[in-house]
Amino acid sequence: MYPTFGLKRGAEGVRFQGKTIGWGVCGSHCSYGEVIPQVEAVIREGAKVVPVLSHAAATTETRFGAPESLARRLEELTGTPPITRIVEAEPTGQQELFDCFVIAPCTGNTLAKLALALTDGPVLMAAKGTLRNLRPVVLAISTNDALGNNAKNIGVLLNTRNIYFVPFGQDNPEVKPNSCVADFDLIADTVAEALAGRQLQPVLIQRAKRAVR
Image 1: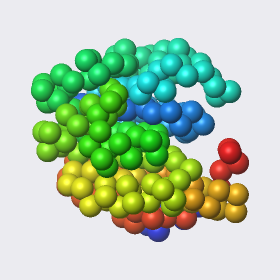
Image 2: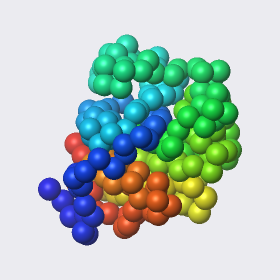
Image 3: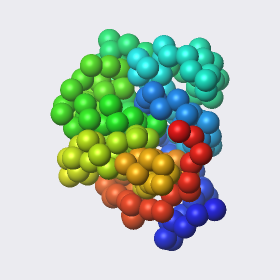
């Protein structure tokens, strides 16, 4: 256990009853084991979750597993087949489908594109549609260059209306000093605050050290 400076974990209640939450999954494959339980957590609190996979998440097989296994697990949890194409993601904005859109894990590649208003995949399209409707987008970052080339993009997004960050910190500063990862256990609390128009604080935390490289 590591300090969160008074932040609550696993707050009791059904905070998301009647809410539809889009959940974008990007190509930080080492994070999936930490993220999937958080999908379950928001479902237990009443949310309907619609998964959206980036191209990397939907097609890349790694030492952490096959993309088909990820898609199958998300469909089992949510009851909804993952969206994997831009043409499937675009109507989510027009239909005002999502009350909130979570990107977890959010890679450096995705947050850089979001900061530059680039829309070249289903996760970014769903995020764009959610912002179009002035609804919150929640980012749970997992990137090796958060304090390097992507620091400026994080700064842009911190100052962008309706974008909220799951509190994050350095995950292995001795080996990867530029790397930061969100505390995925705080996703539900961040979503609850974002739906109320507030950023969960503090944004910068001391995070548990990660062995994954």
